[in-house]
Image 1 (cartoon, rainbow, N blue to C red):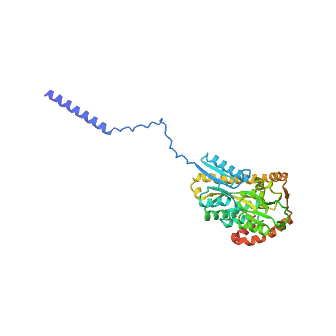
Image 2: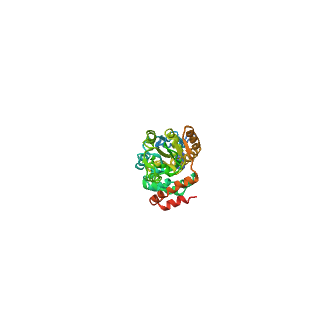
Image 3: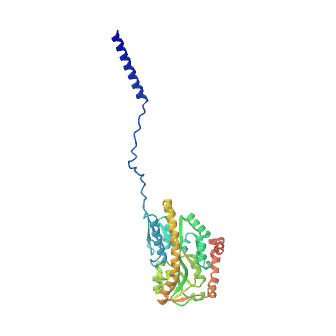
Length: 354
């Protein structure tokens, strides 16, 4: 009996111990696997930026500050995008004439172009306001128009109607008149002189009002035409007369200042919309930086260019205020003819810009 009692107590103790062990396992928390905080965390991989090459065409010689302005623009863009956008410059009408460039910008076959306002006006008529003869009092007036509300209105219209976005307005300065026949001091001096002119109605009308025979011609053809006597004279700013070497085949230059030559830096808008927003900002800022640089450069160089050409034998005529007034009087007919096509309100807005 005593042995049975001892056996029962042992069995009972064993059962209690097993019960406690089972209960302990069911309440024990499992430890979460520890993260090795010392292990190197892999950074999120960024998608590589796709590099973009933009072709920029213009009709100017490499010696012209206009060309140098596009080089400055390309340098700024490359620097600020760490080389992810390359602007390739094609000078001397390599990609086509000024008219070809504007047409290509509209069609999307040309990426960017630097083109005179008078050629752009062939596609968007209000731009002709820039070439109204004697509409600008001086360069500061021209800058205030081009950079201010009037210029922004014109740029918006060109973008809406033609899909061409304007980034900046370079300049080649006020136009002068050169010829191989005689000094020109009055409109009457144009009698019998064959003039090469920019291919636009307003330029044809301007020289018709002066009594000259106007012959439209691309700028790439002018030197040969002057050299061979196909035309007797042409009109261009001082920088162009120098860089295209017209002074080598012309004897006389008159500083008429009859038109201000604004030169538009433009980009096809479909291409623009493919450019990432941060790069768009860089391109816009680069265009404005280059604009400031180019204007300063052309203004600084004009006197130097003129002096060089005088030493080479070019005879310079500067008009008195009274003589210039006679040219301005002749231009009233041009204003009357074209003010309706560009809009009388636009003409008034330019004249009243202070």
